[in-house]
Image 1 (cartoon, rainbow, N blue to C red):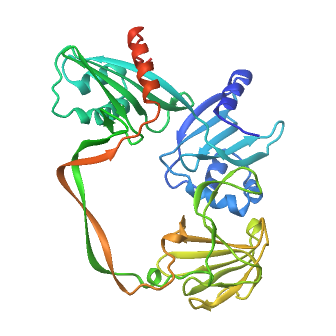
Image 2 (cartoon, rainbow, N blue to C red):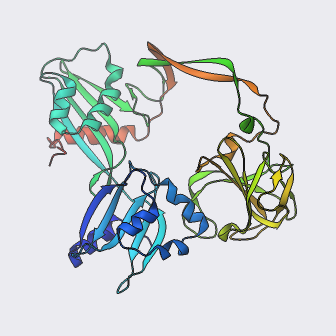
Image 3 (cartoon, one colour):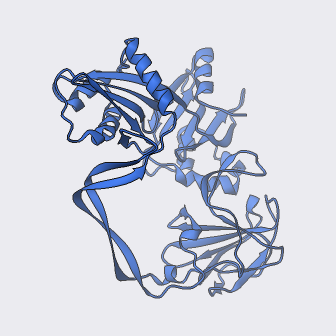
Length: 410
């Protein structure tokens, strides 16, 4: 069953419950959150090992939504773990027990029209007209293509933009679609790409100027930590079947789940190799991961090898890089024999393929560095923007019908 903010709103109306929003407290654990809401910690026992690993992904910058009854008891909570996925807690009817799930974040995308008449300054006039700083800044970015074109008192800027909404509030960044500038009785249209850059023509090689800081790349030899320098591959023959992802469609659960690791296809019984030297921190059954081995390496790294058919090492044992630690299997929740390799650094999942290499690095490597210089850079690219004709016709329709500018304060 798919839950959303809409469900919270329905319960709000029917049962007199109230919706509140909060920021996740810095340093707060999920267990502490349950305790603060008088929820039994026995709930943690019913969360799979795979899902429990996402509890550490809750970030203080995320907004959580809570639905409480008249007595202040938590009925439901939506707690984001990324921009697209969230934890859903829901109290069972006539019970003190709660259900736990991870579901996609649902939001709607709305389209808005605005028209600004220039009086003093384009930025301040736009901000005063629409009461939205983020939209104003994105419009300024799109209008950079007009650098060198003077605007005068009485000129008008009309534009269409979209904004994703979650719980009736702006969610993520707005997107400017098209802009019409009317100056000196002449109109000029600006078409905006997915990156927010504005262009006066499409499907042609266009020039545009980027004003600001230019990235300069240079290289120099730097020392590499011993642990990172020596990461190798977990199998002698590599065939990646599923990559690291924050939102992957799970083939067994038939729902979206983060996939914090890389899957390698291999026959059952294929030897598994330690990707680096270290100490065995876990060896045994690990919920939906089946038979698992964990190795704690230096420099804050810890690797996980899941779905094994047989384990060859014990907790506390020291292993070398390339040593056989077990064999490919199909234990736990799996669609077929394969290795799921997870890699953590200082307690947070990272993409294993960013550090795995077929050959070890030297202790000193030529590394690229980046610095920024203040410059004006002319760039060229073929501009392909979707729905140009439709957006232009729609904008002219809004202007012709004297559509009112949407003010966010309303």
